[in-house]
Image 1 (cartoon, helix red, strand yellow):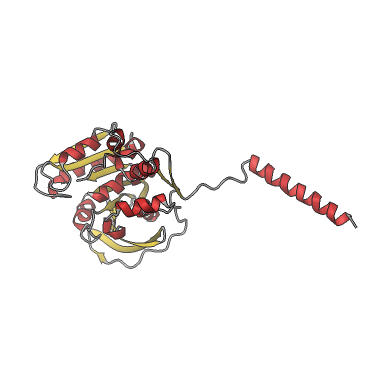
Image 2 (cartoon, helix red, strand yellow):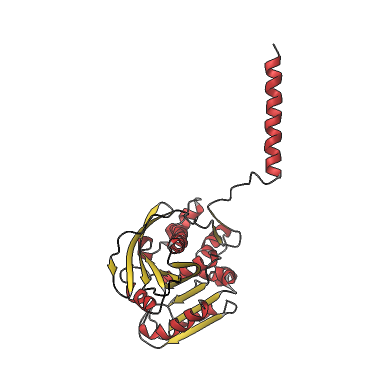
Amino acid sequence: MKRPLTIGIILLIIAVSLILTLSLTGCITKQEPVWDVTSDGLLRYRMPALDPDPDPLPEPLEETDNYILYEVVYESRGADIEGLIRIPENRSGKQVPGIVLLPGATVTKESEQGLARYLCDIGYASIAIDQRNLGGINMEGDLRMFLNGEEPVQHKMVYDALSAAEVLRNHPEIDPDRILYLGESNGGRFAIIGCALDERARGVVAISTCGYGIDALVASARMTDPDVIRFYRSVDPDTYLNEISPRTFVMIHSLNDPVIPYSSAQQTYIKIGEPKSLHVIKVEGHGYDTSMNPFLEAELAKVFS
């Protein structure tokens, strides 16, 4: 009568021993969380998996002798993100570099096509995306979500940028090892964080942007709650600057920027190590201006050479 019970105990012991053996030999590994924030305030995401069998691209929206324009939609953290991929005409047959193009707040992917066309003219593919809330942020709402253990929208926006890079890497005409992030204004902040998290990226170009300077608030004791500090650091580009170096970091800013003062850009720039470049124009305005083109062409040629 006791024999089945004895056999059951033996089988249980064997199963436990097998699990322990597999764990010790690395055959079973602890699954890392999809996202978290370190004690220092660094956002951490598992990079989106590169799809080994991506869906074929849709029919082009436009096709000329100089470029092909596609509209794409990809899934990212529970949302469908729309983007425009612009591929330059490629007679060489070699893969071209790709740029993740992140617009400023309220700016659509269509409105970003002036810059995308210029990048295409000098030989670079790009994907411009409609960011969640069109790049607008709700800092207090995101803080409440973070304190409640929920994933803040700004964190998801970083993941959207990482996913856009993988969309480019999946394209057969784009070199997966020559990807760069480029953002304007608020998009520049996400570009900096995205580049920091994407170790394969060559670097970042940040136009008309700056960090939030959270560490200065902490040092002045105007912010003391540890979890609040962790959140604000997690969305502050300044937190991630050391994660980018020694890759390329470029800032382009107008001396007369009416939205983000040039002095604020300088404060972010001085915090990062080499290699770095800061280019200054003197137009009245915020964001990309065609007078930035010579700097863009020279810097992109260096980073992609």
